[in-house]
Image (cartoon, rainbow, N blue to C red; front, side, top):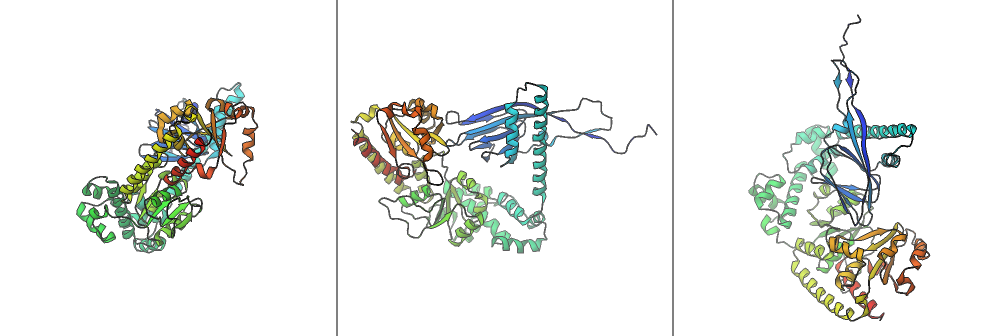
Length: 551
């Protein structure tokens, strides 16, 4: 009996080890961090905002976000220049147990170390706290601390495994919502009603009924709208021939696309790309002001505030509908459908920030994505104008504005300002910033050609319109302070600017040459910060008045 062999094979899991841990800071000086290692990596976001780009996928990162990257992943960590990113990078390895195992034993794979898929957990502050503690005590002074590190490390592994198991269970749970999401993400592939019904966990006939109750469309109508609207996006951007577009959106050839296109729009694809739009929706007011400048009032603006951008010299909006970004995605979709929106203009980062899924919005109307931080306001205007067939108006306005810039420089250049270094200091409840080439910085440094502090000038030269600002400590003020300071104060959520008193009463502030010479100008946030053509033009006029009246 002692030689009896069990009918069950023993299973053994590998052991986890923490290979290394690093603290990463992404700032305006080093806005990107490239990741390519041959081990599994845990990226934990301690503070700030940014994105992680892996292949063609972009993940929005905020404080508390956690990502598990498989070995050999090529990724780039990119900071939000306004809120610099602080992350920890923990390398995870596994090794087999060293004890002699029975011949029948099976070595099981590690779910954390062997999983080929990226795991993204948007809000896991407990895991981030554990990783931070590991970093602080990465050089244990005692064996007791070493054992404590081992416990914390395995708590992290346990939490990851629990989150992954919960995620897999949710992914496998049949639901109508999951089938709709599948359709939105795979519309260019061959999809059958049977597939979608299986994902939803209902019969084929019942699926169609439930689908229409949830979306207002039949599955076929929904699929056609997704494909045709994506084709419209590609036509607007000029991305390929009609045949190439047809294949990209899931149609077998350009003739089938043309038939479907005409059914939906009443026009051929070739005539659509030259068609002016009348009912356009935008996300956030800066893009709304671009449209107004082009003589097209947005039908819908989705924004944080109903306070509209100043429309000096323009007809104020008459019929525009406002939707607050606090509204649910379902409410936003409902309003856009009810107002028969023909085109949606938005930045991808804003869509994700406010929980609006581009794939879900595409069934309503085609989406033209205009990058926010990657482009300056002039390029915003040009791309929006191209999308709505108003490029000539945009170029005429830009030519007139560039003449205004030339005149403004001629007025300011004779003054002593051209020899001064101008620093733009912005005080917010969350911290102290020095502005670069956007907002008021565009007018000061690019329109008027005045001198920025050396460190800011280096970043403007390197990043151009992408350089928004740099976050600094009070003790760093002297490194950026010029002979003249422009100060913008942001109030807190209660409207108070009491947080600025800490700065104004600091010896670091009082010792600045500009402060001692009384060369500090307080600028109104609402007048100097908005970043759109109308506001930039007004800021140029104000800057000329400011610098020519202080001689």
